[in-house]
Length: 457
Image (cartoon, rainbow, N blue to C red):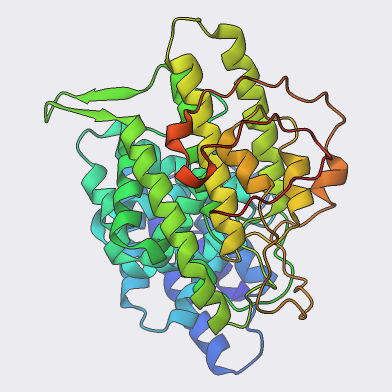
């Protein structure tokens, strides 16, 4: 395609971009038909894309070509039509990659800007082929850029345009693959470390409704991804489960810190409360974890591949310990929330650990779990989980797979030698525990001590 450059130079910016898209479609169709494996777009074609669509000047001394806002809108409409009319998914995916695959050069910023506008338009117009291509892009691209794309959509549909949330909500039915990747990206983006990184309540409500309606939604990428070994450390997780667990565990403390427990929607005169939404989300996540044994057994992966990684949970318990320390410093003796919120966070962590381990989502020893929880204050439910019986898996004699999303060095060895969190007197009433455990006195958790298993009587 390098020989068409001279014919594109005299054209105006929109006409040249449209002509290049036409030739790019033909070129990629011929490339696919040639049977070359894997089909790969050559560097000269990528240079043309950068020059005439992304407007990165080929010559530093040449004036930069720029589109007006109207011309850019027309180009986005042409792109939408181009992907909609192309019936072969292989061609669409290659074309999307040629346009928006990051090359590590100065044109990447232009790529990201155009990509955000194209995907936002695809959401508004229900252009499924573009959403499917964007789902693949999110799966293969560095997470830093994935969260940037997610931020664009959240800004466009949850912040800038009032009443546009239902439009974004429709991606669940339009493209479940894209919806799953979007959830993974936003749970990576919003880690609840600051008020700015706390998810907008409209976004939270939307994600809760998606997962309530279809719990398997968060597993779609995993179910449709061939197992190829180690996931690149820079990519998004294969499911959003880790991010959703982090949201649920940190929410009681993070939302209290940021004073964002509720938001009044003046248009509908409804008050949306964050607390009940996170409770519903937590239950939905536990239900998804309970689906895993059958799914993992069908794939022959039960006991061999965990969807929750111990290093991520170690980071979560470290963050939780910091939040609990902050809550202690600002707590008022007369405030019931000063005791309720920390215990709720610890209860949710304990439930997530137990259900994940019992259903094959978390592959680790109980000693590993005790190590990552050693700095947390006492919690009755967490102590029961950490001192419970050893879990055995169906495939206990089958060696674990090498697949470990973002696996690095052992998170246990990497933990700093911090002092144990000061033991708190337990605030969870014994009545909240199973009756079989009520007669037993509460014991402080001591790292490294063996824990007797007390069977139910």
